[in-house]
Image 1: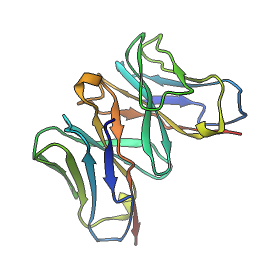
Image 2: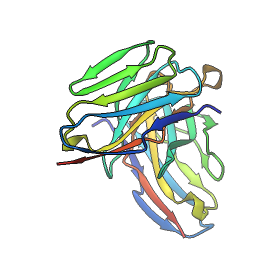
Image 3: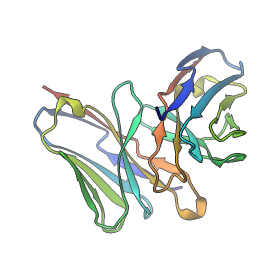
Length: 114
Length: 113
C-alpha cells in the first residue's frame, strides 16, 4: 500500500532533550517536506527536500534540522526542543515538486514539550 | 513574503445548506490545490486548478480559480455530515523561490444534522 509513515505518533518530552521524528514513504517520491499545524495558523512548512542530499528551509525552520540521505526517508530533528515547538507535525511527499503535484501526508505526530 | 488568506475561519451549517470557503493570495499563483482534513486525520488532496478561470466539479463540490489566478473558492452544495472537516487551499511560492508550498489557515466546517 502506497503510504507515508511517521513515528512516533505521539511524543511527550522535556525541554532540551533531543528527539527525532522519522518519516518514510514507499512511493519513490522525489519531494518530501515537513509541516507543523497549529490552531488558526494552518499548515506551515518547516523544511523541504527536492531529492537525496538536497534540502532547503521552509517558512518556519528555526529550531529544526533535517537530512535526506536516502530517497525514502526524511527525518525531522529537534536538537533542543522548547515548549513553543509543541505542535502537530506532518510529513508529506510528492512525485516531484510541490507545484503541480499532489501532496501525500503522513498520519501526523503530536509533540508536547514540557 | 507570500501569503494565502482563507475565509471564513469557521462555519457551522445545517445539513442540506450550502457552504463556501474563499482563498486569496497576495501574489499570482501558477496553480492552487485544495485539501480536506477530517477531525483527527491528516490532509488529503482534493483537486488542483491550473488555468485562469478554471471551474472543476466533484459531485457536490465545485472549485473555481479566479481570472487573475490570485483567488479561488470551494463550494459545497447541500452539505452532509460526511463533509465535516477543515478545508485548506495551498499555492506554490513564486518560481524563483522553488518549491515551497504555502497553505491557507483553513476553514473548519461543522454540519448539524
